[in-house]
Image (cartoon, rainbow, N blue to C red; front, side):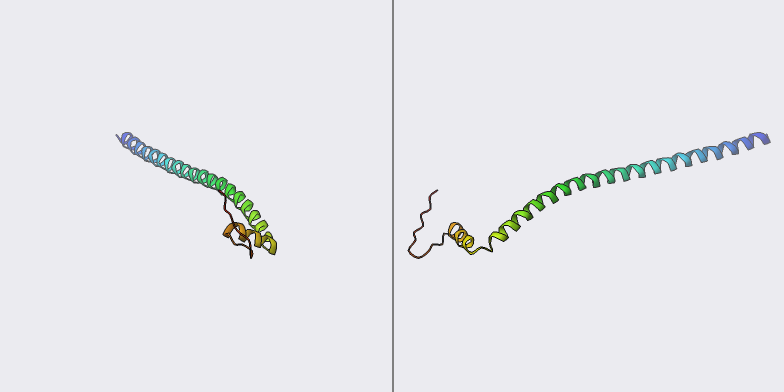
Length: 97
């Protein structure tokens, strides 16, 4: 009878350790999976932001070119005449669609 009690105690202990081990493994696996999902999302976001950065650099270059052009008074005068329909004295503006 003493052996059965010992064996039941040992079985309970092994069962408890088994459930605890499985629980720890499950929690660890879920945590690792969660972190992998976060890493993948950050990787996708990084790719999108890199594409956006390239577009913004291209736009910056275009704006720098425009800023350089706006330093030229002749360009400014021509731009104002075209964009805002300003005219020189004695000049008529005809807008053709």
